[in-house]
Length: 333
Image 1 (cartoon, rainbow, N blue to C red):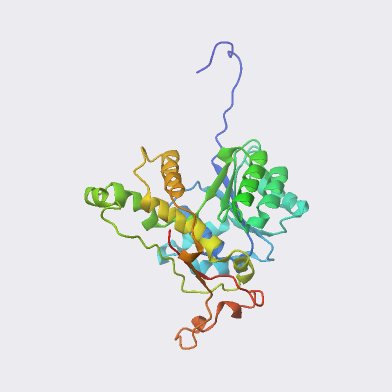
Image 2: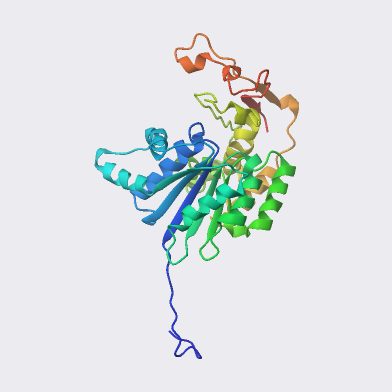
């Protein structure tokens, strides 16, 4: 339809169904998140045609890798049936890799040139996934804003947990991001919420009349939330040692589950309503007392049948000598 006064003018609308996903990872070789979670998820979305056909994926890290090395590192974590191999090959044809530093603007300009080659009519939609340590968030987002944004298409930035080291650094990071992006451009996520059982918690609680009526303090004496990993730091000791188990999983993964388990039924399933109920739970938790906390560090089990369990946390060469960082924590809330 043409509005009054528009007669004689030609309007051209271009629908850009093209997405470029850029995965910033500290090390594709050692980082778990990219090779074990992000790439496998993108493959499943591509395989099931749940993302546009014109979705290009760029890996970006300090590691100097060829595409063959990237594929060899990621492939063991991709689920692919025999009849899906052709589709998998097509998936990899949309993947690229570039090595670069996080504080060098020239590397970001190189990245931007490569991204621009995929544009349609000078437009592309760009999604930056920051699977990197929080210490790199500010410098990386500053360079993205300065060099790599597409002002004609949309730009989104996904930031993985932990979001800062403490309350002060978290607020500082939020202020920093607010100067660069609008709130609807920034996605703070906790990938643990993507697990199927976690996603089904609300349905389990509020969609089941029997559980819903009895899910309260009058019928439940206590709730134990346990997180166990059967492997060590696997070369990521330098990163883990600067955070420890509390910052790595307790104040994000486990608090998210706690809030889902304990919150009241939200008015709707809209994210704002769910978040408000989660916040109410967290505000009800008294300050944790040291007498209710137990910390420990894995020292290895010489009698273990599995080889990797024989070595303790400090045996990892990437862990600083004499580290007292906790790999075990238990707290009563």
